Length: 161
Image 1 (cartoon, rainbow, N blue to C red):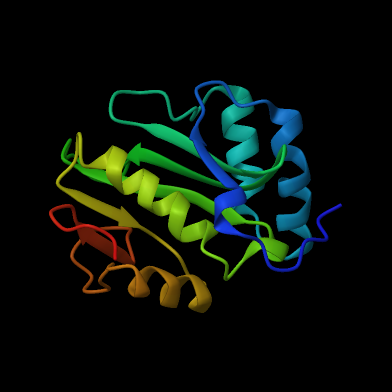
Image 2: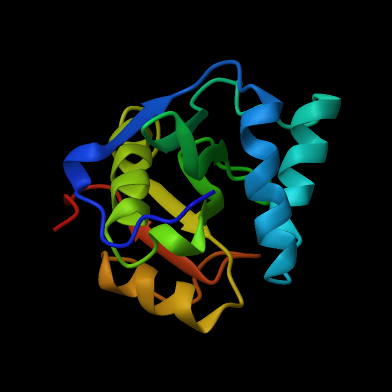
């Protein structure tokens, strides 16, 4: 039911959610699995079980919507691999394939970065996807491997371009 070609970013609404409706996210979970990604299913399972609801101190969950349809998601956790309360981690960024390369991911990450600046000095993330690697580098993340279990990091003193 996603048949929009080019979207106008003015039609994309990014909002922070404290109580995600799992029925809204499920079509994205299925789409991600069709693409061979497992991380959104893990997000769904962790959210359902309460393992990770992005609701601890310094954490947040953002969704992107076009009309009333959920087209993307991105979470912020305290980095679970480091014993450093000043390091946050981008988790579970996913944008529906029909809405990629149109600024939705950048908008989601920009919201996460703004939220992260309130609590953290650095953001980390992990990806093994070459397209995601290029995306994160294009928005200011570095791949100098300074943090355990992370492929990318970004100090939080500058703004996204």
